[in-house]
Image (cartoon, rainbow, N blue to C red; front, side, top):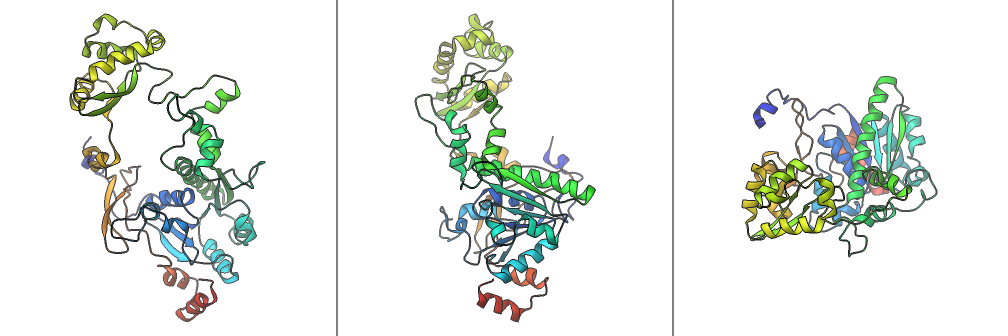
Length: 403
């Protein structure tokens, strides 16, 4: 399908499918901001409530070249508004609850009990807005023997068992190179918010949505927690697969490719390509039993071909394969460019840089990066003014440390 055909019926008068919903986000670092980012990208009005000193993500490297703006912060806080409130201050707490009274959803990712101790927990917000959807994201969740522990992304990866299978067979457990637990926690937080918002629309009933990074990682681990509970043997496969062979990363004359076969029909095609028609009838269990032999046959063939030759010939035969890209190489891929996965965005310091765009594509209500991450307190006057706070009062709140 052509891109223009997919968006032929697109509306241009909406920010996205969630326009009209208001989300108050009291978050820090990644999992909570990621949940808010998804909803903001989808068109919701997301108001990030940030401590007047600024949250830690603003200061986490890397920063853009010749800029003080942090890549991580700019990536996950675009399309939002920003209000600086000290939630430990009585006036900051009061203004936060007023904001929540006019909102549909709250997202927070502090250690369980923290916001309740400040007087802005679920019960406090539900008292002023009974239909509120209140999403809490934490390392171990709101209940359970470990719920009072701090839990960051690598802690969740190692606690859940996920890291135990990552890496090569000769290495020890290895964390993911990205914030995988935080990303999945944020994804489930946004999904949970959407489900609860739909319920609230139908019934008027609000609720507390509890997301644990450990739960999110376990849920997305292909049922392996059940396998562990049943005592099934689990091992690290690195670039290979337990259920198929040959599949691996193979070195070519000018780089690496990743690919292989799952079905017997796929192997028959690959056997012809590498000149081993005599083995074309080998079935899946046979190939798995002779994994190293078949793997070496493919590796030897790839070593004398370029990555382009391998990708072209395998794709022509209907086989799944790709050149192994770095992120710098992937950023130049026409596929990702065509799908708007990099969108030039003018930041608050005036510099224009490419930011990673939304993944989901909506044919009727398209989404995009509408604006960069706001500066700290950028929208104080507008948003707090909507609560009746005039310029003089705002100045006094600032002097008192509430804003």
